[in-house]
Length: 421
Image 1 (cartoon, rainbow, N blue to C red):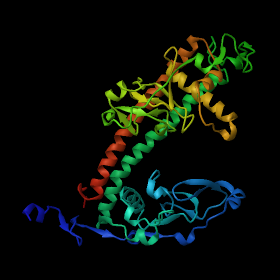
Image 2 (image 1 turned 45 degrees about the vertical axis):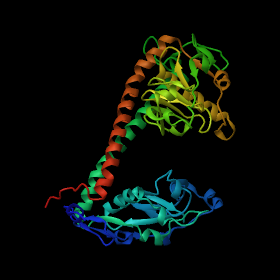
Image 3 (image 1 turned 60 degrees about the vertical axis):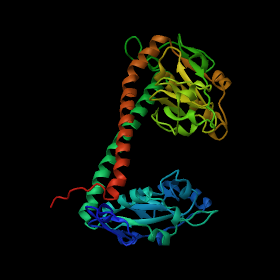
Image 4 (image 1 turned 180 degrees about the horizontal axis):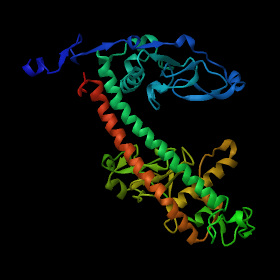
């Protein structure tokens, strides 16, 4: 063995021969946190129906109800105990909760012995490969005993633990602040659209709300609408385009430089900034997809139906979506108009959902729309909101990538944070 393999500055050989940072060691999870599983109380659907309220009721990986009472209070760590999510990892296995809440018996509940420990354990557990600790084929399970065997590598010095949590936590705080800003900007955009296009209180020639100040209204198929407005199907205002998928058996078409939007990439946010799959120029040239410009409106038509988003960057698209653009280029207005139309469709659909959207669906969905000058006035008013949303979304991605690249280095001691004495 060479000298470089025998020695490594700042590290020592652990019991299993692995390199361990000097001053770090492996902990058991109950060295760091207290299990409170004995306090969990599961409720049946019938019991929950009688106890509707405001307190979150957590299951294996998320909130799935709200109750009129709580059994836990304060900051805790929940870890999925069973369920397919342990294998699929579609949702985080470990997540922090705070406040007053209830938990059933599908999640372990722990309380960190130090305030920073809950955060570190959440980050560490979600970054680990847990396959060897999960039992059961039909029903995957992560038992308390398995959790006790997890390799929790951390500094012995609590101050260094706190420093790691502070660095990663500050990035999380910035990301969360930007997300909250985006939620506010999106709500403001939707509120302004409703005021102008649904309540018809756009500014009149005197700058006052049109309808509330006696603006002339005329009858239409949707009820009364302002004079000079038209009532037509969505495709009268929006151009609709289709997509396609390159052959999956041709490797040269995939993992390229162009984002490829599918229903899986739909989210609750206005902007789509990245996609699960990418394709090459050859994939575009040899399929019925095309590269759509930024600010194109995407609508999921099959699979996850009725989700809308704006392309933050040029993207291609598969055949389970539609790409739309407002006929005069006012895509922010067109996007909000489409959102309102989808909400309208969901409201009248059975159970609030539908299986597919076709071009006939869009053509037959009537919406009121104003003269072009008013649309352009609205677009000018709303554009700063969307530009700020775009900037924030890009910053969120940058900070998320920075945090995720720092995480393994900090949690393995590859980057050490100096501790002030």
